[in-house]
Length: 399
Image (cartoon, rainbow, N blue to C red; front, side, top):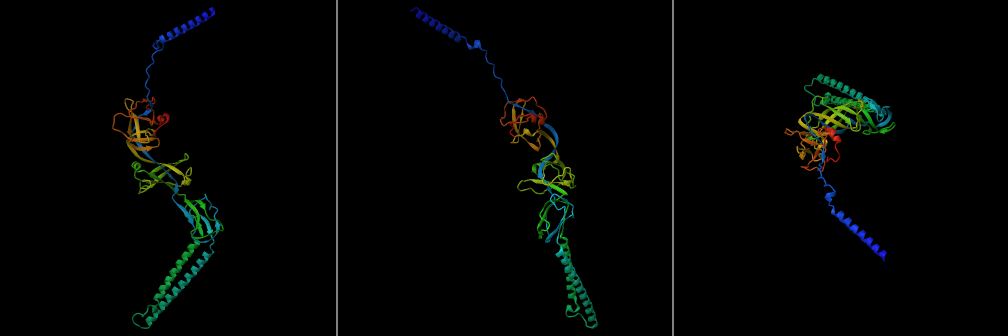
């Protein structure tokens, strides 16, 4: 009985201690145990800005095109016969000089044709001489006869016969010229300085007039056509009448090779599908350049233009896909404005300068999340060169 009373008393004491502890914890206010939180600092997007370079800048128009030879020929046969000889130079990839022999055709029939034409000409000349002699004798006999006037027929004095014989001589002479020409065509030569692209005939093969023998590219000059927009034409001078004075820088798009060409002419019409005019750029002796410029190379051409006066130069990354620019005003607030672009050149864009005494601070890499009136923090790198600012800017541009 005493043991039960002691146990009950112990439980009562523990419960009382728990109640007192809970009261003590609840009686302590949070303000007395924890300090008040600090107000949160406002955070604004950080942007990199740059002031545009103002002044006069030389313009340069870039274009792209494929190099093609000025002269391209599908060499064809003009006579028929069996190929009896092929030149050692007559292989794809070989260079030829104008007049080099490529192949020879069996000329037996053509030599016979020349001989027949010579014989026909000689016979016609004899006939003409005979008719001229007959005319002389007829006139002498008419005069000795004492008859007045002229014979009733011109045939009596052999005038028509002489005329016919003279025409026959002319025909025979032309036939001989044609026979000699055909004979000459049995030896096929390079018509100009050329590169053999392909060959379509073999030794012993029989060819017909019109059959393709080879494809030749001229090696004296190549050219490329550069389509240029109407807006970009305003930055170019008129082509000079003096040849080879308007130089153009040419670069291989797949390597660092460069050449110098010149503007040969400008087209005088607008292509219906592109709505653009074109400059024709040429380069002389392309295969003798260092390194050689081969037909078929895809080229980037840089055409020097006029001086752009009173413009702003900014990084191309500052212009969005919608041709807009963002700048920061004096209160570090974003403002959006249309970009009045005069010209795009590589990683630079040139804007018509605004009539303002304050040069704007332009965002080098605007983001799609920007909104007009948004507060921002300018990067500590403000004012660094545009190229460096563009390199250090973060990704996520709307361009």
